[in-house]
Image (cartoon, rainbow, N blue to C red; front, side, top):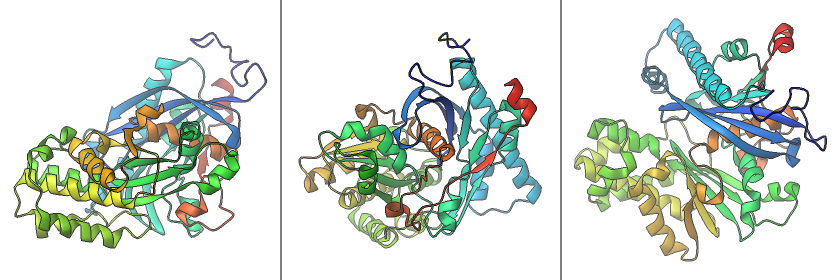
Length: 397
């Protein structure tokens, strides 16, 4: 029996006979601070599914973050060390998933979807570090991973891949007009969702999205090298600084050159700006200037929307969100700027939740790539590589 009183015989379907699954989604972003896991109830299959977040858990990467950052920065590492990083990363996933599932249910998890840690992304090449087999062995559930590979192999950019999940989760929030969801992660990207009132299939043909520019990758590097901090909590230091127009304009020029509609990744972090223009500024001024430039660029590049909802770690940076608000009001005075929580979706758990949704779509044979966003050839391929438990594990789960 589950804590809610549902028997194992009942758990696979609702009273109406609709398929019900428990899916765990896991995500670790370029900030390298933690693994986030979300337990998702998925009712129905394919594009008709409805998803509900049951709970979340998070576990800091600790010393593993430094080793993953070394890989991402192109540092020297022996093959044995890379293998150990991948193995230890898997064991950390086991810990966070086990604590989440134990806390919320006695029922088995039907599926685990894991993103892995991106240490290189320059299409057509991309590498997400992960050894899924320790997760399968420890938890006895099938694991789907490598959700970007099929898109890349078929001519796509491999990112962003969450817009289809954004639409399934937020389409009911678009009754008042189009919504733009802006993820302020290592790189900023957006999903534009059309006004509600059309079928899911038609709505998906109208969804737009893409990478915009570097975001926390640059801001966190500034914090580490100039402030001696892992990041600038709430943008407190940046709020103390002055904006230097010449340095801001130089960063804007770099963002213009890289923001060409392709997927961003390795080599697009604007780290060169730190040496050429930020080096002569006071640390707080460099942080303020970077936030202002990124905010100005984002506000200029976003498509028109009734609501702009911010998510990701950068949504807590008041210097960055303040800059977005200032520039967005000048361009679109009637647009409402808010955070994702105001739309009923937790910004802190969004990516882990959405990887749970993407995993369920992969299991249902639905392509998660949208050709209009990643540039993948049409029809888009099915995504994901699968690792499944042994028959004895399946029997005793």
